[in-house]
Every structure is written in C-alpha cells, then in structure tokens.
Amino acid sequence: MDEKGEASQKTRVTVCIPTYNSAAFLSETLRSLLSQDYPNYEIIVVDNASTDSTPEIVRTCKDPKLAYRRFDEFVPSVKNWNRALGLANESDGKYIAICHGDDVYEPNFISEEARYLDEHPEAGGVFSSAKTIARPGTQLGKLDRPPFFKSDEITAKELLIYSLNTAFFPLVSPTFMARKETLAKTGYFDITSKFAFDMDYYFRLFDWGSVGYLAKHLINYRVHPMQASVRFYDTTDTQAEFYQIVDREMKKLGLELTDAQKCRLEANRHWGWAIDAVSHAKLGDPKKALELTKKALVYPDALIDFPAPKFIFRVVLLSVFLSSQYVGLGKLFADIVYLYKAKKRGG
Image (cartoon, helix red, strand yellow):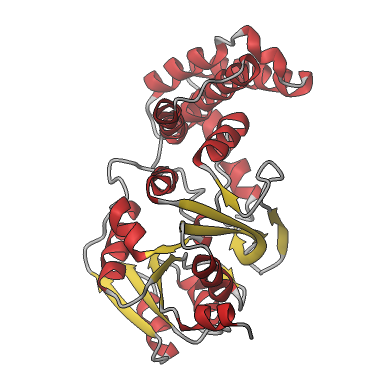
C-alpha cells in the first residue's frame, strides 16, 4: 500500500444513518456497512421514533463500531437528517457520511471516498455512482455518473446545467461523504423543504470547496414504494422546489443560458407543474390541481424541441387529466398514476 493509501486508512470516518421504520432492510444495510475494508470508522443509527423492530435489529448487531440513538418524537425527515448532522458534528470523525437505512454498500465504499478526500484537500465532499436494486436484491439498473461530467471533480455550473437540461438531479444522495468542517460551514438542511432539501444542501456545499463524483458503483441503491425519495403521498410540490433551487443557483452563478437551454428549461418546468398537479389531486386539493394543470398545458413554442412522441404523449395525458378534473374524476386519475408508479417500483 502506498503512503496515500495508508493515510486514507487512518482518517476517522463517522457514518450516520437517519432512519424511520426501515426494519425490512436495515439488517442488510448494517451488515454491508459493518463489513467495510476500512478499519477506522463508526456508525450512528439515528432513529426517528420507529414503530417497527428497528431498535431490536440494531441491538442484535453487537458491534463496537455501531451506536444507536433513538428519538421518541417523530419529526419530518429533514429534521431527522439534521439530528444526524448534529450528532456527526459532536463525533470524532474527520469525514462524515450520511447513508440510508435501506441500501446495500460495497465493501470499499468508505475507503474509496475517504481516499478521494485525502487526495483532494480542496474538495469539501464526494459522491459516487450506484447500482439500483429491488426488494429481493435483484439489480434493476445503474445510476452512472453522466458523461456530461468529464472528470471526478465537478463544478456547481456543470451540475446546474445538467439538472436544468434533464430535469434530474444526478447526485446519488446515500453516497454522500464530506469533511466535518465543510458541513459545519454549510450548516443544516433547510427545514422548510419537503422534498429537495438534499439537492439544496449539496449546491450549498460548493460555496466551501469543490465536489467529487466518482464513476465507481459503491452502493446498491434500493428502489421500493416506501423509500423516502419516491413516497410522494405526503408531498405535493416536489417539482416546484426543484425549480426554485434551479432558479436560485442560476441567479447566484450569473448563468446565461443559450436559447436552446431556455427552451428546454421552460419545457421541463411546464411538465413539473403537471407532476405537482397530480400530487395535489391525489391529496384532495382539486383547486390547486386544476390551476397547475392549466399552467402545464400552456406550452411554449419551445416544446417542439422535444421528440414528437414524447410531446404528443404529454399533451394527450394532460388533456385527459384536465378532462377528468372537470367531471370530478381527477383524484381517480391521480390514484391510477400513483398505483402505476408503485407497481413499477415493485410495490
């Protein structure tokens, strides 16, 4: 092992797992994290008042590297993540990883990301690519680092352009590791956010250093109906939050878009209104659902930038959704959409 490799093995890492009712998957997650090829780390499970067997699962592990902190008051997910940050700041770890309680980590997850931070002192944090798995552990696909990013080091501008062009935020949240001092400067997750608090936080990281994005698949990211990132039943404005962050970052960076980029951004924004409209219909707010559906159907000429089949599909789907709302069937339409989503995720 070279000197850099030895240095990476010496840096203390604290792994925090904010979780709620993850008993179905937590054992597998803990086994993977307790089997890392890295010697100097600890794991803190931050339990958000789970009502399942989460406490028993943690206690049966009996590993000195594992600590369990239970909170009896249930709070929104973002506040439990802030609890995890608070505990991390009190730990003796130099690097902090925030992991999920339903994913499976490769044995070299900690060592690879700690090595990157050791070898890149200018970097405040690092992410990696991932494989996606279903409930039985079968592989579904991959979340690769997009070819748009030319190296392991990415910039806020690159991340922003990719996000607004694709309507997708590419950083895989449960692969996140950062320096403790960078987290302290960045602060806590925004508790006013219902969905995109991680996206907001990761853009703020760039204020304090560069960010790494490793092309290696270091985790197996589990896709299932009850995971927080796809459970929209208590969340209505996911797309609105996404574009609020995009607009903020464009202003902060002084980003000037090309005409083509402006067209694509507005097209994606309109489809985002449609997605939020379905959520409002599902949750019993027909007035807001109708308002957003009408906004979504006011397509700018720029939408011809989309391939014709996608454009036609979106217009037809939205027209059917709009008609369903006028005859009092908007919620039924939304229920069908949600059922379809759940089936696709193995529910």
